[in-house]
Image (tube, rainbow, N blue to C red; front, side, top):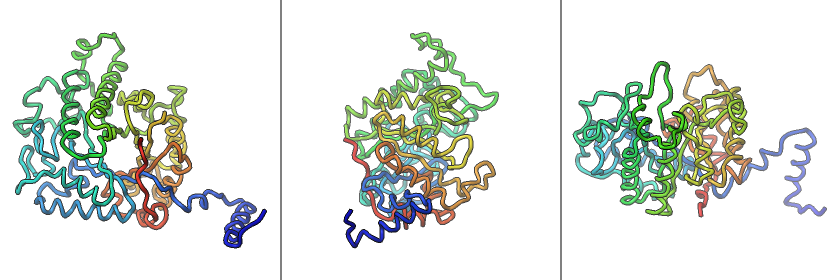
Length: 411
C-alpha cells in the first residue's frame, strides 16, 4: 500500500494506538459534522433565562437578549428554543391570551414603551444564523391557583370549565375537544403571523404524578370516550389527538415550519414493555400519558428531542443505553438529544459523574457515533451553559464545537 508523505504521521499514530489498545474514536471525531443541530433552551417561566427580571425595560430586555445570543454564538449554537407561552400567556402581541407577567411584571400589561418582542427575538436569532423554535407549554395555565391575579382576558375568566386544579396549578383539561381546538388555534396564530422555524413542546403533558394527588377528569372521561378505552389509554389518546391535529394544521399552514417535542427521556422500561429501554426509571408513557414512540411511528412530529439529563454512569438510566434506544426508534424522524447542562451546577449525590468536566463533551461525542439517527444536541438551559460550569462550555468551544455547523436539512 502506498502511503503519501503527508499521511504517514497520522497512519503511524493510528497504528500505535491500535498496538497499545487506545480507542480510535477520539481521532474519528477530530472533524465534527458539517450539519449538526446545536441548540439551547431559553426559558422565560419564572424568569429562568430571559428576561432575568420582571422589571427590565424593553431596551434592557433587548440588550440582555442580544448578549445571550452573542454568548451562544461564540459557543457554536445554531438554534434557540425560546419559551413564548409559558403558562397560557404570551411573549408576543396576542388577541387570545394576556401578556406574560414574566415579561412586564403584571399579567395583561403590555410592554412600555410598547413593542412586540417576538419579531425582535426571531430577527436577532436569524441575524446570527440560528433557527428560532417557538416553545409552547400546551396545558399549563398558571403556576399557582390565585385566580384573582389573572388578567381579565385570561382564558380561565371565560371558560373556567376547561381547567383542572392539580398540585397548586391550573391545567387545561386534555380530555376536552374544545381545549384541544383552542390550543391549536393559539399556536396557529403564531405560525401564521411570525417567521418562526419551528413549534416546540417540552415534556409537560398530563402532570407529573404526586402522592395523594388525583387528576379530576372523570366527567370528561364519561362524556368523551366513544371507544370505551381504559382511563390511561384514553388520556394517551387525548394527547395523541392534539399532536396529530396540530401537526396537520402546521403542515397545511406553513409546510416549512417544523413541529417537535421534547419528551421525558424514558419512554418505557424493558421490564414493562419488551420494546422499552434497558432502564429502571420513571416512564413517560405511563406517568405523563405521552406516547413519543407512537408520534414518530405515525409521522406526527418532525423531530423528537428526548431529555436525557442523566450521566454515562447513572445506573438506572445510563446515557449510552438511552441514546442507542432513541436512535433505534427514530422511525425516520430527526432526533436531537437534550442535555442537562444544569446538572453540573447541582450538588447532587445521586449522579456524581456530573462533577467530571469531561461528561458533557463525552455525551456530545457519543451522539456522533449515530450520525444517521442522531442529528445534534440541545442544552438546558441557556443560563447554565453561559455559566461555563467546570469550564465545560470552554471545552465545547475549543473542541466539539470548534468549527461551525449548519442545521440539518429536513426535506
